Amino acid sequence: YKQAEGRLRNARDQFEAISDNHSVIKCLANLGSVAQSRGKYDRAREQLRQAREQFKAIGDHHNATECLLSLGEIAREDDEYERAEKQWRQAREHFEAIGDDHSATRCLANLALVAQGRGEDEQAEERWRQAREQFEAIGDTEGVARSTVGLGRVLFEQENYDAAEQHY
Image 1: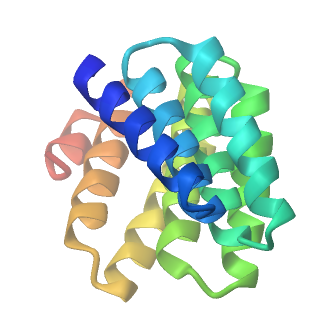
Image 2: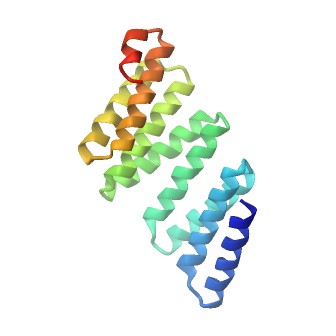
């Protein structure tokens, strides 16, 4: 991770030197993702928030929303379910508005994780089923698999072992 951070900072400096603002902002967002991977959540939040605002300022709403998606992941990792849910709902609305079905479905799967974390099994089960159907519709086999496993976990937590077994 240290090497990745160093290279991203170097790239950012090079992009700044040639006034490529969009690439500078992408480097900032990627630095936030690296900080997130290292568990440095405060730094990650700050970098992702800055990148999000800068993306919005230049009209890049897709990358701004990707930053919001990452901020939701950090909130969930910190067990801040309300914040995560708010951010993922907002991100989902943005992705749906621009026709990005894949990212909108990723948000739905993340919302299933929030429901699971809160112990809202019925809601988690429904969201996992919806996500699986949507991933199937867009041909994302990995998303289908992850949704199937998520659904299996919910069923297992409900002690519905026979149904859970079908999802593993």
